[in-house]
Image (tube, rainbow, N blue to C red; front, side, top):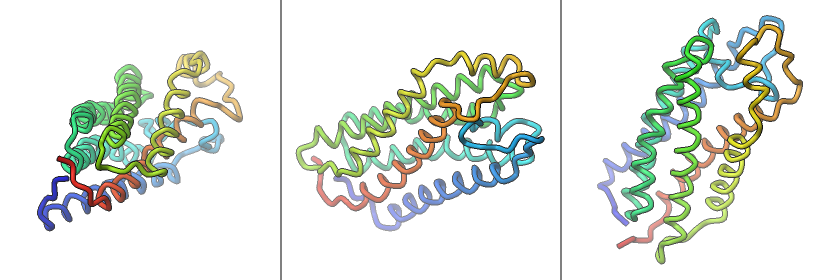
Length: 222
């Protein structure tokens, strides 16, 4: 396992943890600033992207969170690849660059004004991030020196399952919602926004866990 010098290592880790903190604070801020217009925001039936709609007072925080994510994901997978030098982690890093670009699309193009590029960014971000996460899981499984932890297995598989459900669940209700938001009857319990939030939270948990676990490991990979 490659061991960068201590000051450089500390800077990378501090930057990654700071990035995660900024993302969480920015999303939470956009959440509490949400202008309900008579309909309270709920993760049970509201999409994340609604926090970033152009008329929302917290939209800037929401968009900033995804721009920061655009830098965080490649940095995180580069950090993992430096620690775990295998082909799978290198591929995960390359894919994370695409994830970062997709995240910036989500941040720069709000869904209410630029639905097309926003949705492209959302699906690119979801698919590429899930692939990168599971490539890291495969790398640990493939290595004879690295040890898979229960936490890594559970978080990786849980994130993958939630992401797949989000991708595969029928989207007809979403099409109707974007076609006519005014007359659309929003369900009290809406599976798609729920799994969107669950997947997002799962990815954040995976990031925090891997930052801790990758640094904790002292095995060397040749």
